[in-house]
Length: 548
Image (cartoon, rainbow, N blue to C red; front, side):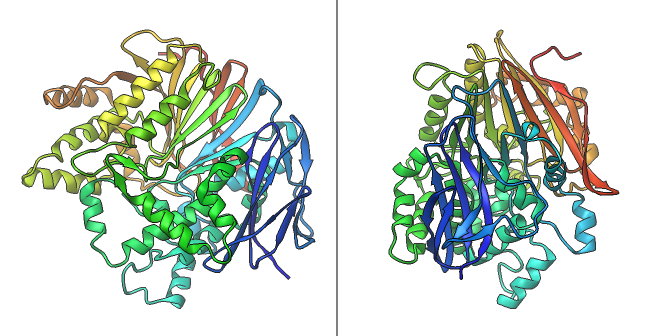
């Protein structure tokens, strides 16, 4: 009899439809809420994405998971409330709650790892949520990168790898292929608390560098070096194939799935679809005249809230002297879908999901912009600047100034219209802060950078004073003066000031929208006497004035 290995994970939910993802140990029919899908196979692993349509708006549907007719979810003896699908009201809801964060190491039984990584903020959130009324549950969860750490594996995974191959040969204890990625996702998503949370709150995802490898696509120099290794091609292919299965397809709506050629080929394949996805992954890594062959960015609408999630890793253009966060074609898609008009639809709040922050501590931002220019040199100074770029992770939006300025112009254009807020949601940098943006001319909307990281990881203690120093205005002014001495660096089209943070430790962020009003609450996780718990920090009002 087939068994349920992972999931169910509730993914895309709107007013009339939902998708639910599962992994099983054998081919079977998966039935959820009266809808059935047959599993597809990739390298001997079996998956299904069950698509439910025709649901009633603003309805609640409790569900179980049946494999070939036998119930496998909820788990026997579970104390958690039943998993359920809560569709959005027609036309949206005046009260919308979105949870977000990034950078999550797996739970570990090893005392050293447990002490280092601290309390999992998602687990702590699930504990509290299980005791709350449904009306207080979040409507959406957005995970902004580093769901798995392919280059920083746990001790348990390292032991598993050692039983499979020789870890003294490259890539060592980093993952090598698709099968080892499967191990990472099982390790990250199979704990009871997180599994129930994912089964009950709709989850959207996007990758960042550690889902593939630290500094992934930092520069063309980085790619040229890594592509000379014997193991990178299989590693990157395994990363993208597993990402497509475990993360990407759940971001798509039923209509988008129906139009997706790769999804049709995989789900209709007669046997193993590994070759289909391998060829797809190879196309996804290539650049064609300043464009990529695959778009991982996507859009979600939640009534008067629009979420645009930008792929800031795989979509980068680096060849032939070009350097942009995404190609022109993808940026055109982003700009078209950000429009607040009759064609794209109207909204009050635009959320731009970017694993990498757009607005960073000023000192760090200016250093990144200067480093990008220095790396263009062809002598020893350029080589030194490239080494610094890779060693210090100088690879965020400010180090792609042309792309960053284009994003700034887009945000300013939207803020000049009828929206109430424009917020860029980010992670990656292992601390928490909120910053408000201002522009060279008045705008109507409040504009913010909201950063929450990590959910379950650690930042080296020596980095904490450096992050605080990054906000120190006297040093920022000196660097700004130095930066603008270069004729290659244009004045920034945006300024910003910190309104909350920086905070350190594991945390999760909650964005609440009530009509045209919104606010942000950061909650830090720690180990309480009765299990993991959350400690809220002061609320940040996003549509009211902040003290200066």
